[in-house]
Length: 81
Image 1 (tube, rainbow, N blue to C red):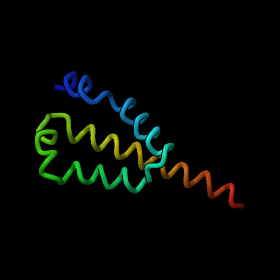
Image 2 (image 1 turned 135 degrees about the vertical axis):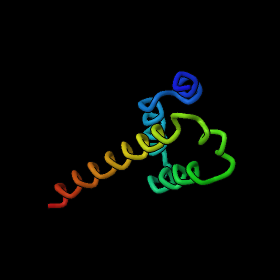
Image 3 (image 1 turned 90 degrees about the horizontal axis):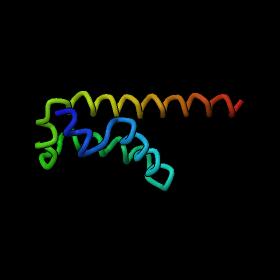
């Protein structure tokens, strides 16, 4: 199942690169977080949620994005001083 998900959607690093690209070109970080929440809850993504590795991949993606966001906020706080 993991191979199938990787083939269809790319591995975590490829997905993260796509999200970074989108953010660089105008997508707001809050929009990304809202979309991740939508994937968790919306009925139209139920087939995707039924895959074995869905929870792990989505949590890894969300955690990586939040870590990256907190590091960016932390580095910005040093610039302010």
